[in-house]
Amino acid sequence: MNILSYGLLGLLTRDESSGYDLMLRIQPHWPAKHSQIYPLLSRMEEDELLSSRWIEQTDKPDKKMYKITDKGIQVLLEWMYTPVSTSPIRDELSLRLICFQITNPALLRQWIEERRQWYQIRQDYYEDLLKALPDEAVQPTHSYFGDYIVNTKAAMKAKAGMEWCDWVSDLIRSGHAEQKVSNSH
Image 1 (spheres, helix red, strand yellow):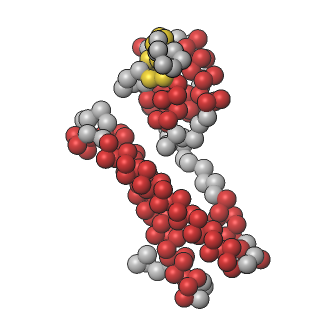
Image 2 (cartoon, rainbow, N blue to C red):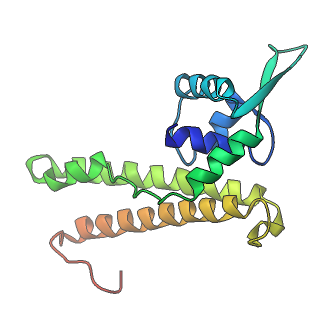
Image 3 (cartoon, rainbow, N blue to C red):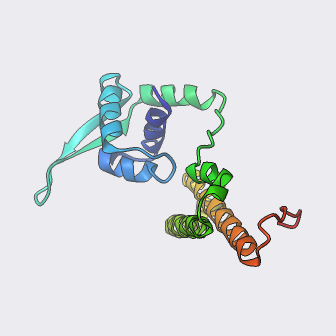
């Protein structure tokens, strides 16, 4: 079992889902492709961590729906009580920024603007996810509370990323790229 497997099981605790829908639901939090998800679903079904059923569709191919089993819930619960690993920090832009001085300064501006646009798209996406949640999701006892706090975290990170891009852009425009971050930022 890898972390993606546990994430898929976790998504199935609320309701049954197709492999495609699972992929769409997990991608905002854990990048995964069909080629990763479907073999994991098959393996977990073989291990009796989930069950499946086929739904006939007239206008599309039949759809396989997955549901977590009691054994799957037990495995998921065991994982839930293990220590949470720290997230690796892997950001190609950061590596490029360390040595940007060997390039054209226009390239730096381009990178920062592209990253800001990416953060804006991410923030809009997570804000849309938050708007789709029921109002009661803000209550810790609600079944969608986890979605609420995770999507809020992602929206806040995107907002902070845009603020950082704006800060860097201001430094570049003012010609004071050597300015240090103040405690007020």
